[in-house]
Image (tube, rainbow, N blue to C red):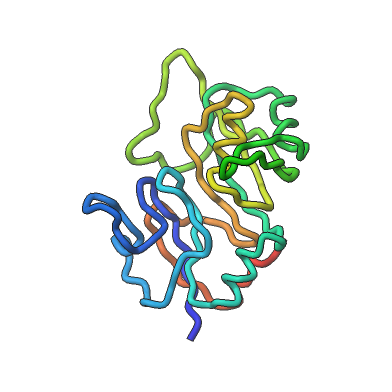
Length: 196
């Protein structure tokens, strides 16, 4: 039987079940998932947010297909306040980042400035803040998922990422899930991930 879980992965957890070191926190520290259930894609240890886990091999394959162009939406807290021209650089599909020691031209992205504060649970531990540098939030939606891509894109325009939260995957959203919360989905709900 296929199972589907929506998890709000907290900061500091690896998107896997096997510990690489005794002090590493992994998904099985949050919940005892069935043995054949695995995360679809990854969020690195420093990233938070929506993670879909399933044993549905077809859904997994469809979501991870590089040609699927499934949108992934992130809220990104950065140092500084970007101008519209900075955000245009992220949008236009001309920005190049390094991926596996090669230049990668990023696809176009949807980008929206959210302001200095948003309604989100504080991170534990809190981000580092510098008194003389303001922070702000930007929403970015990508249709690709290279390793640490969002962080590299913002670094390229000189706005270091302080916090990165995935809030959407296709038609799935975090909704009211708090860090560490898990909700089992029906197959119909899980298929929302395939929507564009």
